[in-house]
Image 1: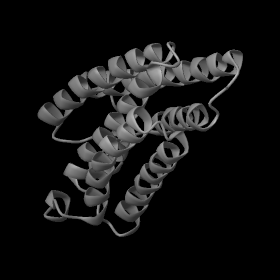
Image 2 (image 1 turned 135 degrees about the vertical axis):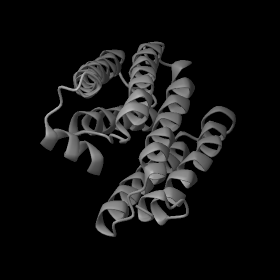
Image 3 (image 1 turned 180 degrees about the vertical axis):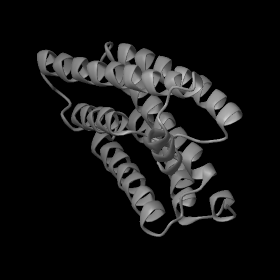
Length: 193
């Protein structure tokens, strides 16, 4: 239990580092208009995201704070990058809106689960797929300045579908937990993610 309450762990510090990278890539993209450097910083953020998850699981450094801080760092990074790209690609606004709806829903139902069930549920496979697709789409738009509009719209549409699917699957899980219809083995897996 004490391990779960630790604050200063390597994974938590990496999540905090990712949050600190956000002003840097916004500055690189908006002010310097250095798209390759922006992509490099976004890649660094992605690598630290993978590293913090690996370290947390491999060395049993999973903490309650980490389960909250990691997705916050992800969503802040994604939101900031989508806002940056919105000025060149208006359909990024739809991605941002659907992502915001998903996160508000997950935030409210997640808080209710913590309050009622005393557990924090982490990311599931579909959330990770949607996140990977989103980062891939963002990176492609960053490095391919003159991307054909048809390809841009296809990539954006694919991300929208993945995010909506993830939202639906999280909604099913969270509502089952809140209604007490989650199987015991599913509740256990919820605790360790």
